[in-house]
Image (cartoon, rainbow over all chains, first blue to last red; front, side, top):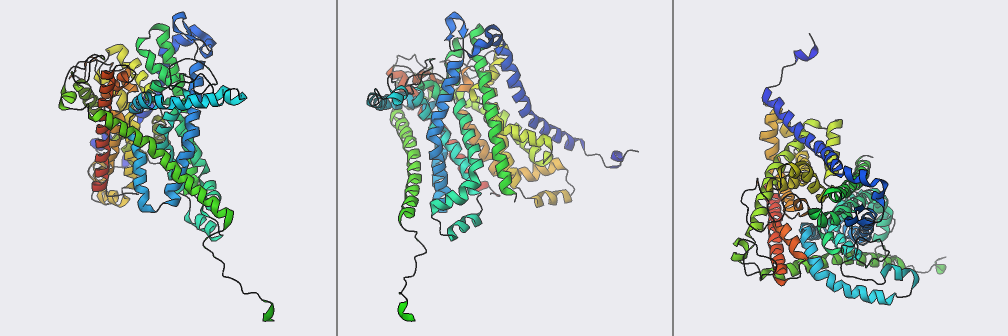
Length: 313
Length: 298
């Protein structure tokens, strides 16, 4: 008689509940695999008809030329701008919350940051295109004329300038990723052992020196993970960027010029597309999915490893 | 002997002097500045939406139908088709994603524990929160819309896919806080694991679970990208969420935002205020639930 038969069999209801729960958990894996398979299938004719030209710079649907480089470039540029603006602010607010303000003040500040996350993407876009872009265009124009003729700055910030541009999209994306980068950094920073901090103070450190000597070495890894998650968000955020990026498939060093990125070209053009055109947009979705999955796996890995290190010891 | 000693001032141990102190103050000022930089755009957006939207919103705007063409002013017709679409589609997505998400989290915390499958599912569910919403739209388009056509149901599938990992994560965090003594007490009375989970563990964590689910709903209600290719955008009310093209508040805002017509823009602002109001109500509800019904917290 096998040993298993000796134990009392669990009731059917109990076992089926476990099976249902397991199925619900597995659903996550199933959905992720299905996303990869179904979108790749739809994108197959883009890959097969264009070959390596999918990474060319020409995007001309009327001539059946679908090179994605301009969109990949735009995605990278806007995400980098967004990170450059959002990370210092987010880490600053996270430090403010954990190390500076008294505990009873930190709660309202967290609420305010959370409000930023509740504002829907499309509302950022509406505000961005109707209010923010016309306003910031004047600033772009004056910066553009200010740097006219200066070698590097001119090619970055000079004319052509437009309210709807890479930089505007970057700013709006920065607003949108600030909450997640802030809250994750705050969680990491809050786990710094009090004894490390008190040790630094006992040696006569100022708060800044304590942060640099005790908090930063401890939280560096986790903050990098938080930044990577912000990068993933910034790359995939669609609707706000689609409204303010200017919708022009160009590769240019001019940050104030209109551009395009991967999610916004899908959002704007998928409705009218068919055949290889639709397949190409689907292919951009596959690339976007692949990029964000890689970044998120990296980021989650880093966050988890650093939090395990913190809990351990 | 004492003649050589100079009377020494007691050193001030509290305040480092000079450049070090200045640097510290600059750093603190920069942190406060960072927070101000966050408040300004938030205040600006909320102010604009309320200022531009408040004059548009009326009973007729919220319940009128159909949505008129772009050239007409906002005093004609109304947003009822979009309000109805948002409520039904988000509601349907909630009905799908919340129970599945809670069950998934039950598996992770109550059954899986630290085994490799649960670790993998937990990790991939976190990764899934990072999948761009537009990819969810493309996914449902390929597996559903191409075969069965546009419908509110397709939109609900897409929103449900977005909500699922959020619900799993928030529920999982809440289940972890339920003390083991509660589970052990119930086992000691002879209850099965399923019964313990349903009648003891989940009720003990219900406050946090509901509040997490409400936040996921708020997130989904504001999403546009997954709906673009799953429900399309129509102007007439479609009460049947299971078939036929539909519309939603975010889709209407998106299609109105880039219009040059005053009427269309006005409708955009009115819809934006309605949408933000819905999201804020959900968020406040989540806070109230957290404050009143949470038994265990970090």
